[in-house]
Image 1: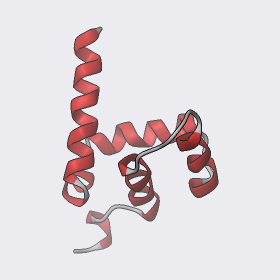
Image 2: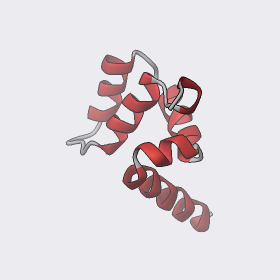
Image 3: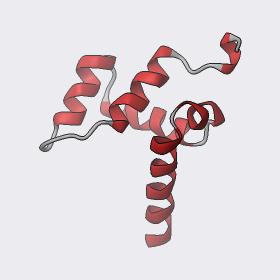
Length: 78
């Protein structure tokens, strides 16, 4: 597969963080700052973009489908 069809290293790292279980408040946000060097706000922008990215779905279908279910449930509550 050529590079245009692969996720970036950062995108794969975002999915890995999203896949992990986090204990306690702030642990995930701290990991985002330490591992990725970005703000939590930017992280969640990337998560939202990856949720609709077919490359992310191919890379990690379990995590992406979970993110889609959570997003759809939030939309239904509004």
